[in-house]
Structure formats: C-alpha cells, structure tokens
Length: 60
Image: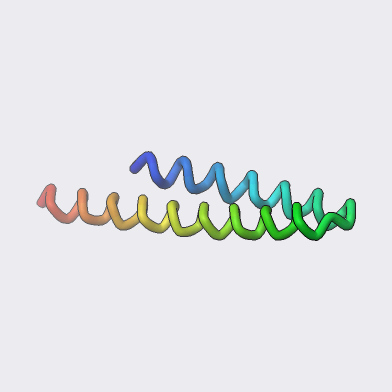
C-alpha cells in the first residue's frame, strides 16, 4: 500500500471531523477548512491508488 493512500485517508478523516465540528458550532471557516482538507485527502488517496496500480502492473 502506497504511503499516499494512508496519509490521504488520514487527511480525509481529519477533514470530516473539522467539517462536523464546524457545522455543530456554526463556524463556517472551520467547515470550509474541513471540506478543503477532505478534498485534499481524497486526491492524495487517489494518487496513492494510481501508484499502487502502476506498481502492480510493472511487477508482471
């Protein structure tokens, strides 16, 4: 498993928590930060998935 997948998943989770806390407290800035971090995590996770796919394809 590529390290980008792990880091990306962690960022997604952290972003989700920030977004939820921002929503619960009515803090629009925290909500936006959470959404941005969540999106960044998804992208990084996807990059890790591509790296894994390339690694598997080159093994054969």
